[in-house]
Length: 151
Image 1 (cartoon, rainbow, N blue to C red):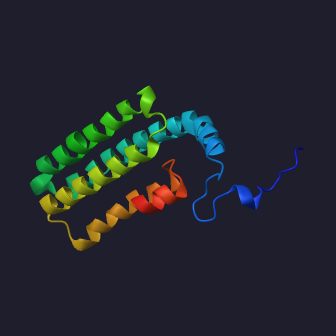
Image 2: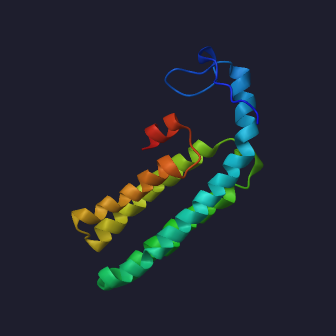
């Protein structure tokens, strides 16, 4: 079994985990790019599934504005998510995962605001956005500092 070696404290940034040697950081990011791209795709697919599954709740809670809500949720929000999923296949964006999640998160928050306004949802319903923030920290392949800024 290979012995684990603790990193030299002089090589890792104190506040934002990154290698102090810029060339090493670039090589590390390049080596992680394929895995982060795969994780991004999986996260976006999961997001589409979770967003779509809430349509069932919309049917039960908001039948009077159901058409508008389903248009927002299943057409608009999912179209944006699918578009970003498609963008994840663009080779030049392989190392640009954080900006993709920034835009997706911003657009979803805007979508959620329109959704709550259309449904005239009670304030408690807005707490559903917590799931998005939970995903930022636990599912999205973001560095900690990026997740903090996005959250």
